[in-house]
Image (cartoon, rainbow, N blue to C red; front, side, top):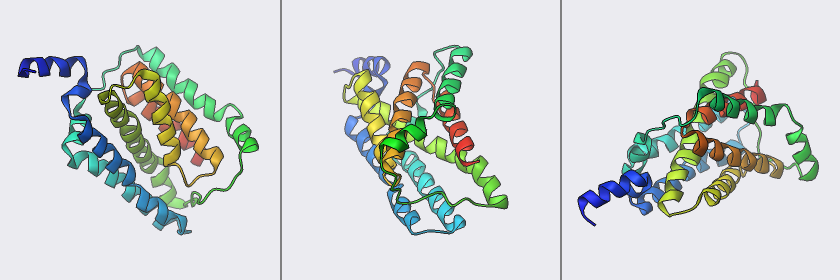
Amino acid sequence: MTDIEAALAGRKNPAAAMPRQALLSCFILAALAMLPTQVYRLGADQALPWLLADYAGRLMAIGVLLALPAGRWCLRRKDDLKVGTLEAGAWVLGIVLLFHATPLDAMLASYFPQSPLGSYPSPKGLLYAFDITLGLALVALHEELVFRKLADHVMRAFGWGFWRIIIVSAILFGLYHWWRAPAGMLAAAIYGVLAMICYRRTGSLWPIGFAHYVIDYFYFA
């Protein structure tokens, strides 16, 4: 393939512009970057150490994206909104309402055992104010970058179709929440399905990133 042909292929399929093995390695490292802090949190019962570990793991994952060429390439891919603001807003509202205006959590909890390996430490005062704003913004940014934007580019680089990407990325997102009860893992996977559909439909990470933040805000506030 000539340089011109490669460039044209990259325009038609953005994932073709970066070797798929490099993208896959970047995704694996970014996903695993959070694992040590997830394990540490299991034994932390104080809010400050728990949150510092959480922030550190998420910043480390973003650091992987910034450090590796495949990660930087992914971050530079433009997220141009392909739909109108009304439809984008409808996606945000619909996803938020599903998780906060329906008995989804209660229904899942009634069918699956509740045996989480850890829990949120409920910070107080200024620490709570920091976490409920910047902390949750970091959560949304980190998880949407890794499990939506990067995951989408990785799977498209391997030639996967729309629904295969949706299902596999959702399963991975559910497994990423391994420390939660089975109901929590399944809820995360359901969110992962909707989040990736929203991302692929809107063409932008911002609608689902905002929805992610709002869901967490109402859950932890």
